[in-house]
Structure formats: C-alpha cells, structure tokens
Image: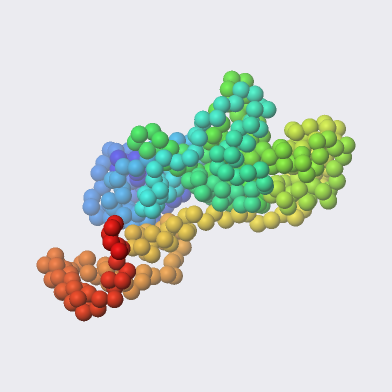
Length: 391
C-alpha cells in the first residue's frame, strides 16, 4: 500500500523523483525514493514524516487505503501527449476524486449517486438525442438552455475540475466506486484556460462518455460529442427558436445563439447541421469561413470559463464545523484560508484536550447551573409540546 500511495501522490503533485528528493532537503536520494515506490525498501519514521510534509499529506495517509476505486472511463488526448504526462493526469484525477468523496462523506453525501454510469445504451448515433433528453428529464432540467454547466454537474456529484495540462490534453472522465461497486461520485476534467463555450461542450462531452454505452459500430467520440451538443441545446428547443429548415443563417443570429446556449460558433453550426436545419452546402460554407477568420482558436464574444464552486463551498463548510484543520483545508483548495474557526469552536477544541475527569467535572457544573435556571424560570414551559389528550 505504501509503495502505491507514494507513487500516486508524487505523480499527482507533478513531481519527479529528483524534485521530491529536493523537496525533502536531500534527506534521501532519488534512488532510495525509487526503491520505496517499488516496494524494495521501507523508509524510516523520520523519512516518512519528511515525505508526508513534502507531499502535503498526513503521515497516516501514506498507509491509508483509498475509500473508493477509481476508474478512468475516457481520456481524450492527441497522439503527441507523452506517457508520463498521461500518467500524471490520471493520478491527479484519482487523488482529486478520493479527496472529494471523502468530503462527501463528511457532509453525509457519500451514498449512491444519480449518475447512470455506462447505463444508457446507444445502438445508432441518432439515438444519442433521446439519451440526452432522458438524462435532462432524470435530472429535472426541463428543455431550457443550461445556465451553468458546472452547477448542474456538481449538483449530481459529477465533480468538475480544471487542471494545468498540455494543449495535447482535451479531457477526461472518471468514476469512483465504493466497495460494493456502486458509483459514489464521478469527475469530468478539462484543461484550464479555455473559453466558456469550449469548456461547457468539453464538460458535456465528457458527461456523454460517463453515461453512454455505445453499441457495436457506434463511434464513441462522435456519440459523446453529439450527446454534449444535445444536452446543451435540446433539439425541440433549438428548432422552435431557429426553425426546422433554414436556407441560410447569419453571423448575428449565430452570436445570439452563442450567448443563449453557451456554445461556440463551430459547435452551433455542427448542431444545426446534425438536426438538418441547415444543409451540407451551407454548413461547409460556415466551416470555411470559421477557418479563414481564425475562429477555430479564438471566436468573437468569448466569455470567461465557468468556475466550479462545490470544492470551495464544501471545504469551507467542513472547516468551519471543525472537521478539517486549516492545513488540510488549504491543501484541498491550494490557497491560504483567511477565515478561522469561531470562538465557540476553539473553546470546544480546548475542552476536548482536557483530561476526562476534568471534562466530567465541568459538565456536571454546567448541568447543575442549567437545572437551577429551569427551576427558577418557568416561562420555558409555555413552549412545551402538549401530550395527546391534554387541554
């Protein structure tokens, strides 16, 4: 267990063996670290403590087995993405999901989720439209455009993460399963810094990889892309707003649709073409124009990407409740926390550090004080709940 955890945590931090040895102040060599990760040697207590500090975890966590099993469902990358970078991303996402399922447990949200992982069969590409509508209905989204894709996903325990990665990395989808095999959470991951329209489709695309189960002969990437576009712009809504058939569509109208659906011009042209609203000729005209104007990289009216909120909100919540230390919360968020526990929380922690006999003595004194108060002040009795039959 130690060997596997060391390697996972190091790769998740993006550290080489040399970099980790340096972060430990040269206490051990990279050769020694390699032996620890290979299970060929065991570190001393001093080395373990220094390792944990360098990896920003508690020493105990180096030995703790993960509460969930992580499965990478889809990893979209270009052929030039190196093996080491792919391994780093996969370990980073595994660590991310482990942390977030642990947070779910702290707020009692660690039961089975409403994520139909690989539970939506697709025997033909057109059937993807029905699957997107089905998931929208299951999640009570109606048929309006999705205002914030990150909120919709996080409301259903599909954690959203943006990571610093090579431009050769496009996206990743993963699930976390409990010991009984049920899905406890999932993650969709995209590269940091892409515009909102591209980010939203990336996330919806990865959602497609999570839920679809393509049959024989169905291209998985095409199915996931079609699902993502259908999830963001339902066919019935889009046809109602632009018409069932169009001989042409102009830039101003496409920009209006971009603002309404949060999709790029390229994605909208594909969507309109898939639905038969515009024909092959007009779609090709648009694709040539988009390419000629350089809009494949930067489009007009780009909006900043959506920012996921679940991790920050939940971390601050459990920190305020005293379930995380400041150091643990700061490690999860990757930033310093200004808020500090309330005075009452500090007092509770101080109380718990007292010897058992002293705690019992204080509790007895407080009980006597409250008993005397209730005997002297009978107003509280007016709020008592009457028993059945009392008048």
